[in-house]
Length: 519
Image (cartoon, rainbow, N blue to C red; front, side, top):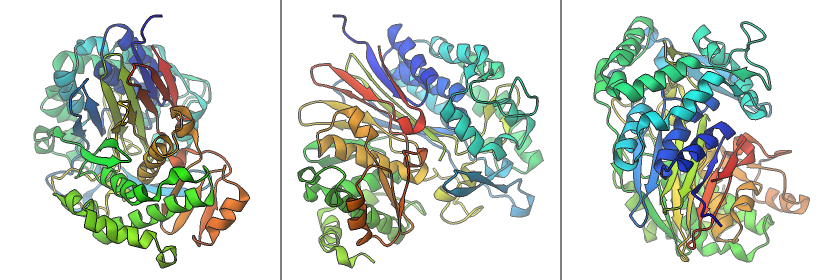
């Protein structure tokens, strides 16, 4: 039998196929991750864009993992609020509504392009012009709008319809001026042109050249914050991942200044002594303990105002045995308890592992002319602006919940996992890890298990647990919302695993249209 070249889990068939095409051509996991990144911008335009940012946790075979931080940065200066193009829209999720702010004044300094080139220089072996070809072909020939992408386009339709250029990225060929309908094919040749000129001329075209000058000129003229200084000074950060031992498995995740990784590590540290594997899956004992740990983690985030200021060395304090034990004591006494992102996970036959999470927020509505790149709205995201809008600290990485993670089990198996889903990212990753490590589930079962999320005194639970389990939980949680089905609200934890013997498995999370392809 021919040895598999690799396995890919991602949020769209076009995204995953781009990665598999590169693996078949002899690329490694990181070549494939970049191919998926560019293809995701074409096939998942609400969730991914070169106008946003993200993170990659990378492990080359036998080496220590390394975290690439290419997330968005706040500008060097804060214009007068009355001069900003910055306004609210309402996204309707059906079961809930959420307000976002868009416009030129919502754009933070993007890092995706710089990140792609840094990853390519450090880890890849194929020319970038070859890596981007699957994405370029998809952009020119078109991508059929599937049910999930159609659903999220409807959710953020006020952003898509905020400008003719934004609408063009989602335009119907049948009805001029309308968003494409289900099963329509959407072409974006300008995006392919943009990819190709970037591959030819390099990242300086955006950060110091013509693309960047167009962006900063439009920001100056139309109420934005970005200047040439913001673009020219942007740097990709390479960090040692935050590391935690959980039941003898090693977790490597996103360290501060991002906050998602430390919150996942804190929750797992609370749960380690609970030995969840001794309880039936989806029982009140299982779910209640996770719910209480989530509640304490939310309390920690609020009490310590994580994400509101510098997080230098805070992980050493929060994950210290004394600090954890003080919260475990609360766990032992239950009566004492008073958005747009996508994930790419890849393993190759050589033992390389890539976990990449990308985000454009929901998008600002502004599209860079001639290249199909919608810029982010990170300065308009309430979740990551805890000080309030237009109160952000100057020239600082925006604190993110994104947590692309790697796991090495005691048996030598390796796992790449991450998720989209705003504040639900940490909950999704946490529960996949518990399912894999505590309950010994296969990866597809671990990803597809019902999930829960605690926030703002509300425990959200997907369909699956019994009525008896829910009734028991209501004695501990005053406010519970039971969701009738799986929902994108609970994230999209596309994950892959490489066994020590080389066997590959994976799962694309059905909540976000995920697919998994083996090469």
